[in-house]
Image (cartoon, rainbow, N blue to C red; front, side, top):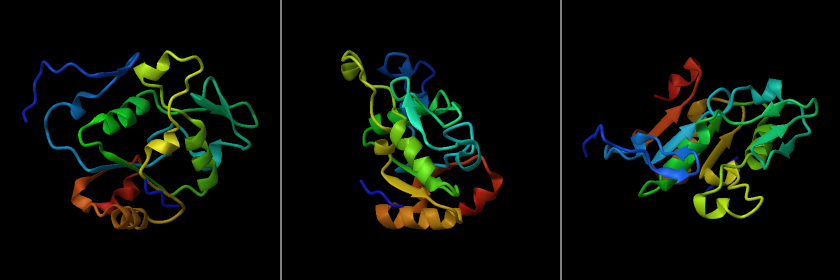
Length: 180
C-alpha cells in the first residue's frame, strides 16, 4: 500500500510541541537531517506484533490515545513515539515519514494507525475533546505488506525520488539490515 502525500550545543533546550511533548534535541542541533525517516511498526513504534497480539475488531479509546481489541487488550505507541513523529514534521523543511513493515496483518496495522492519534498541538489542545492528528495522516509513504524490506524501500524511493543515502531507517530486527 503506497500513500503519497551546525554545531552541537550542550545548552540546547528541547522545543515544546505541546503540553508535556518535547522535541528531541537531535532535530534542533544544527546537524544534517535525513529527508525521509522510515520506521518498522512492530516493536519499533509500538510494543507488540500486530499480527499475533491483536485480535480485531478494534475500538479507539481514551481520546484516541489507545485502541482496544476484542479481548479488551490495549494497544498504543511507545511513550516517545508521538514526540519523535511530531518533531520530524516540525523541522524546516519537514522530514518526510514512512512506514516499512513486513507484517502479515497489514489491514490491522493500518487500522491501528488510523485509530491512534498524536497529541494535539498547543493551539488545538484547548478545544474540548481535541484528539490530535491521526498517526496514519502524518506518514507520507506507507509500505505495509509481507515481504522483503528492499521492496518496501524501492517503492518508497520510487514514489519520493529521494536517494537511499538521504533516508534513515529504524527497525528492531537484525534481518532487516539487508537494506543497508
